[in-house]
Length: 115
Length: 114
Image (cartoon, rainbow over all chains, first blue to last red):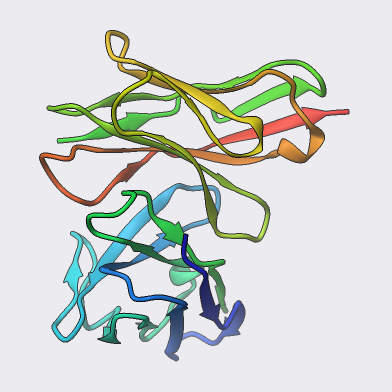
């Protein structure tokens, strides 16, 4: 399994500002993902973070709103830009070892509230 | 396309009684199936998975799940519920011949009463 940390664990932000969330894994992983979990709802995949290249975004999510970086095999960031109250969610980082056990391992999440 | 359904938003059970959390799926090929648990203010934790082999899969914390291909189901079970099992449970499916991205169900809130 992987040990995953996220920073910050929670934040309260003002409308129009941006927040960058960090995800750190204790070992090199093949795949890194960012999910959004809105209150009372399931997980929605935002994007796959690709090392050294642009992230692969799911339908409904764009790079200008959710820029993602992945400079190496153990670290990624997600920025929520120009925030509005609708962005209030839990943001989860997850990882998977390609060719490994197939399940994903999740970070503890970042609880974001936008006022 | 792949999809997963958790037909119950909430399941209530008394401590000591058996519990079942339901999950059905749809994939074009043979599925990879997963159960995760989310405790309040925490990320998801992996419980168990079915990839191939024995239809009854045992996982963490005494949970097990049975893969039923004819009914396209993967229900999560535990013989004797604990109050500490109260949490949100997510079923997920992947089609290994398709997207590497799993599809998650909407989650089922399990409440175990003392």
